[in-house]
Image (cartoon, rainbow, N blue to C red; front, side):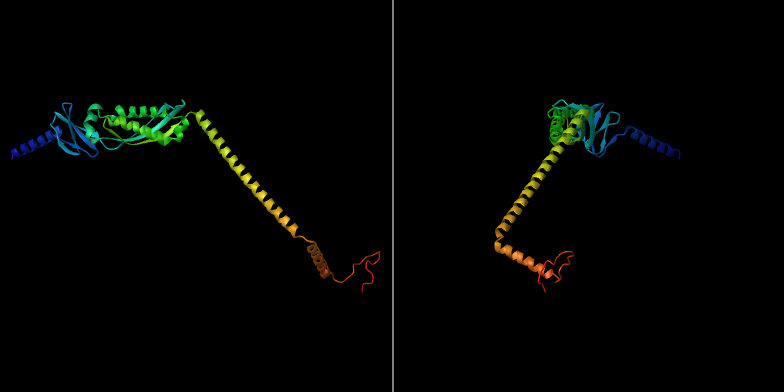
Amino acid sequence: MRGIPVKIVAVLAVLVLLFALAPFGTVPAGHRGVITTFGSPSNEVLSEGIHFRVPLAQRLNLVNVSIQKGEGEGDAASRDLQTVHTRVALNYHIKPESAVSVFRDLGNEPGERIIIPAVQEAVKAVTARFTAEELIAKRTDVRDQIITQLRERLARHGVVVDEFSIVNFNFSRSFNDAIEAKTTAEQLKLKAERDLQRIEVEAKQRVAQARAEAESLAVQRQQVTPELIRLREMENQRMAIEKWDGKLPNVSGGSIPFVNVK
């Protein structure tokens, strides 16, 4: 009976020792593992799952290979020497097969070691190719050129650029005021041009209307003949007779204007 507790204690001691030494390591989803033996990394990339390691001598290091997002901002100069404050966003991931080189060469810190400097350099280099107004009007071209530079540089270090976005461009107050004034002037110019076109159209309409009326009057004058005039006079007399009630007008202090009327 006394041997049973000793065995239980021994088993527990072994379990505690195994747990402390941790001969197995786990690589979670979205990561790759790199085994180091007394600090020296092996060339094998461990996939997701459970892996054996030599206790005390080896260590399992994780490298994130899932898509990550980084944001940053900085100042640059345009081709016309305008100060441009740019805010950008980058989505990237580590190529799984490059996990060992990223761990060994970049200290498992690709963001600090290579990505941030690469983004800053690419943004400044591309911004210098465009004027401040072109940066606004050709924003898509600016983004595409930055992506091209980033992909070429980061691919050498096992980093893949998934997406790059220019969140915002900010310029100096004086430049913003100049752009606003220019935009207002262009809008006023367009309004004046539209008003002029409207006035020209209305003038042409009035001319066309006047021409039509003149032609109509000319046609009417051509149709007026002496016979037509006499016919109109006879119609007016007939209408006057039809409206007369047969009574003579009362005139006081004077003679009757009609004689021998029964």
